[in-house]
Image 1 (cartoon, rainbow, N blue to C red):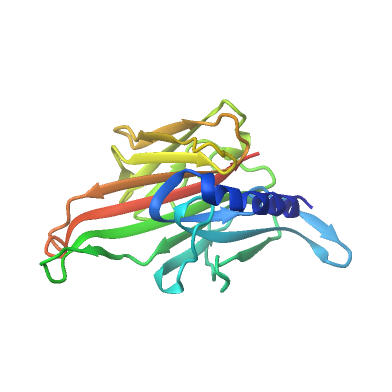
Image 2: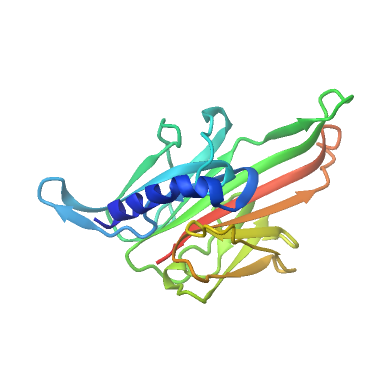
Length: 260
């Protein structure tokens, strides 16, 4: 079955990527998917009701696709957006990588989303209860079951800091540009730092840039089919409410998808 094959391919490269993959972001959160475009199948014994199946699991740390286990105390809201636009709470698995099986009985686009519990990091010496930064981190993965429309993933899920695809990943071919925009509080995030890399790049190859004044950016998909990750980062001065608690505000968002 297709999703089994994808899962097997993922496992084969995990060890290699832990050593040779690009540094995505220190202590970042992202979502991995064993099959980003699972097909609906049926079996008289094991799947009498037609369904598509995939597994979502968490990436956490310094290197894509996996680097460390995510302690449950850091994990915030986790949910899935169904093809009809409804939002459903998702309960992550209790294994080290929080592997979560998804069973989908109809075609359409799904967006899996998660967030860290916001907090402070890096206590400043000599200043009690004062930190280097206040952080918020968000992660999304886009999944297609069957044919989906070009704008299937273009609606925000409601994260404070969020990457929105402007290109349907299912339509990508090698050499194409994948366009996206970054939002902060629902508005274009100008000059956000962008990094992107492929799961199957073993040469530390990555793409770096910044969003324009519309909060938009693009990366070129060259040489590698399969899973990709985009990371957006942005810092801002502390708000009036937080200026006595930290030096700056730090926002991170990740988006994972696959080039078929």
